[in-house]
Length: 205
Image (cartoon, rainbow, N blue to C red; front, side, top):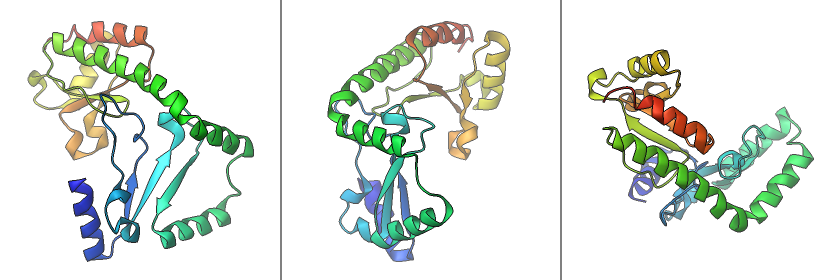
């Protein structure tokens, strides 16, 4: 919340619209609840928040979500949308409505699967010399590359693929701050993750 407060104040002082991507807000663990930027007093004057059903409801590729916040910004986005396309397929809109109406029923079960996989990945990596904290949200694990790669995520990922056939995402692909890390997705079945982890363990830390 402290970060959101600073962001809102920065937007207000500089007349900048803050756009918060909140696609993972419902995938949380260990009692954690992701905050919304709109919880900050006055945020609706300088911010909008986007939500996608892709992650929380496994609707990747359906291209359905919503935006809330600053009324004039939402109206402008709506005007653009109305002039460049004719909206999502009605069946997808109905499915999205059903998903949102059933959130309290389905989300705990979905998150339990991701949490089980999170624990599998983190516990296995740490048992082989990695130092990974368990994230409280999202469906990814960010792990530091072994020291011998000197923070070069590209070199680690390339050698991992070459020697074990396992492909993970280099952190550098997400910008300068991602360098030194690699990413593992929890969207794969348990048995696939277990096999990948057994191969990753071959890469001595």
